[in-house]
Every structure is written in structure tokens, then in C-alpha cells.
Length: 215
Image (cartoon, rainbow, N blue to C red; front, side, top):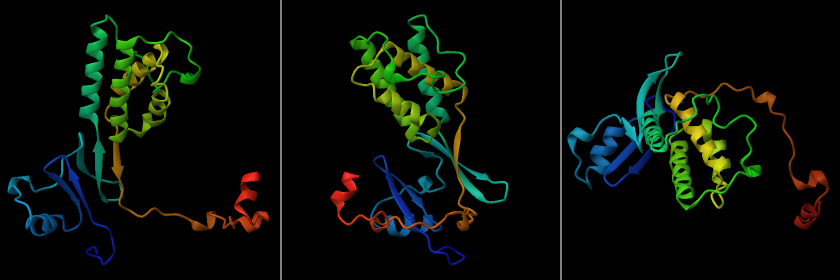
């Protein structure tokens, strides 16, 4: 329980090979006594986290005075963008300068009929999709839908698909400082706004599962 008596879950997350992240009000006690009795811990390594799976953690104070944690992937994103820029420079090309959104306006990868990529470019497309997927894992939910859409084209990637991947990296170059802030406060919600409904099958006059399928 918290210092105010509220029940909460403690999390112990193993990272990499020899790192561990403890989320608890008694994090140091967990590390020193419960984990430390089984493993040797370096004293200088015990402290508030600053990195997690390639992302950066920092403490922030919200407008209401609440302390929260912010998680960002700026360093990883900038490094990924730099690698793509170096690849394009070797071909005399650059990332799109104007990329206000992750994909070009109105673009739909499933109806793209541009030429299919050759083996080398297709392999590069696959690797960039992997990088973008990891960037999504690091909290960049603003590109989640677009990366998923392009990921569906891995079997037969086309020139237009690769160009849109470059477009996403152009977007990330301009918007690399995004962070997720985890507000620990309970949200204020008016539960009267959620009208109660009976979703049982009896409401629809159904008695057998097959009847539901037939509908």
C-alpha cells in the first residue's frame, strides 16, 4: 500500500541481461533486500532510472503540482533519421522537406501500383519498417497507424511504399522531441454519461450461439 493507505501494484521488470526496473514506492528496499539477497548489485547502479529500452526517462511536474514520469525516444529517433539521411545522400537524394503528417495526404498503400522494389531495396524497406516499429514501441503512437499500414505491404513492397517510409522519417525529423507523460492522477469522470445497457443475447431474442452467427 502507498503511504496514504491506497492499494497498488508493484512491478519488477527485467531489462536486457543484468538490468532491472522496479516501480514501487519502496523501490530501493525491493532492490536491496528482496533482489539483493539473491544477486550482487553495484551500489552506484541503484537509483532513479534514466533509460529504458533505448528511450529516456525524466521526472516532470504537472500543472497541478503532481510529479509524473515522461518517456521520450528523441535520441533513438534522431539516430535512425541520420542513418536514413546518409543512405539517401549516397544516392544523391534527401528526405522530404515538407512532411507535416506521417503519410502524404490521401495516400493509401493498398492501392499503390508503382513499380515493385528490387531485392536490395525491398530488403532495405523491411529493415526500415523494423526500425519504425521499434520507434512505435518507444512511445511514438502518432505514427502507429501509418507504420501498420505500410507493414501490411512487406510481401510485395513497391516504390511508392518506400517513398512513404522516407516521408515518415521526414516527419520524425521535424517532430523528434515528442514525449509520453504518465499522469498518476485518477481521471475525473462523470459516470452518469455512460448509459447502462444490457448486452446479453436475451435482449436480441437469441438463445443459441449459432443463431448469433446466422444473423
